[in-house]
Length: 107
Image (cartoon, rainbow, N blue to C red; front, side):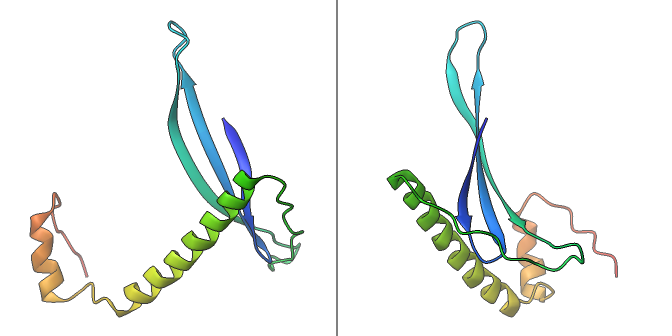
């Protein structure tokens, strides 16, 4: 498993994790999982606090940092669209029958 700090903002950082598995019989190593998580620095009172800036020394680090900027922008756009989406509309509920779910909404 390898981890790297891919992005640092004012109080948050995005950590990338890459997992490889090795077949102990053949010695073949393959990528099996990647994930990203965001951590926010907090002080003793639970308030967000400033974190030091990230030093980018290699082009690969610049690439990962820029990819995080794009992902953050896409997330903001997605959240704006979700605010306008009516999850309770009859049309949405009707269209859910096309998916592998059983709708059992309780009020």
